[in-house]
Image (cartoon, rainbow, N blue to C red; front, side):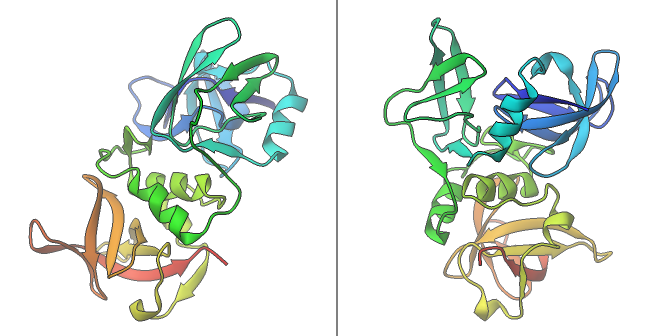
Length: 260
């Protein structure tokens, strides 16, 4: 089994080894993967942080870095870019665009590195590392307000409901699985809406009883979630109420607390 690391700001992970296949996930710069199979110019990968599988164009990964470097990067405390967008610069003057949620391997003050290549960030670029308090999780989530819905997306430039919750919690030190139905198995159950706290996750079901949506609870009976765009709506024991359409859009199933 080989390892690789995402070397571009955003890389689509596809259901099948074809550019015509639908995107089911997205890698951000610094995401480390295990490569378990190959087909022509495509690599079948499993992401190290959540075990999610799919096909990636092998040109969009770096597979030449040593296994020891990648394993060390996996074990080290993760540091994430917390600003919406920035450009890092290598020692040779090449620019590397980065989006919020990018993992910065070997981070030290305002630099990080891929193997022997060192990149420098602009001064005062915000980063996050370690487990954060609920207030930081909420502030991080609000930085995504207005970003469009994109099936399989995990970035400010497009995300789905579980991609949004996953990247927010990942930046704040908590690993969630990729899909809403998987995330629903994590954390501890909250029995009543009145017991819910800011940064709890709310899960919603379809007519068949399947978990199909997730969002992050705020205070004052509000929720931030990706539905059309990342937005804030009202929530009660029935579900999410859209003030614009004056309709309930998602039926509440249960609430989970991720933070200890």
